[in-house]
Image 1 (tube, rainbow, N blue to C red):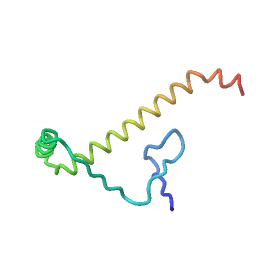
Image 2 (spheres, rainbow, N blue to C red):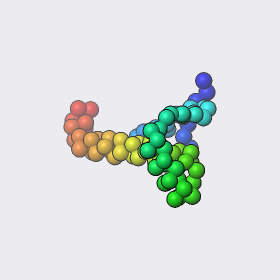
Image 3 (cartoon, helix red, strand yellow):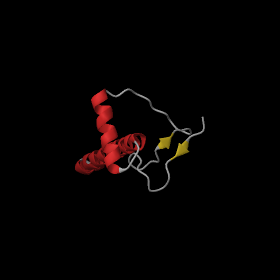
Length: 88
């Protein structure tokens, strides 16, 4: 399978480029009626379709997790920098 890499400026784990799937992914799942109604209401309030709002929310969630991981990894590396220097 041919790998496609994230474009420059996009988030990637630490310093490497994040491999992406070469094809789009479709996701389908059932929401409880109350959540489905809340999604429809919020999408309507924002002038979006429920699909677009769900896609945007998932994109934000995944990007935030990547940023949180990067920040945590950088804190650990900085905190242990002297130890790593001594072990080298």
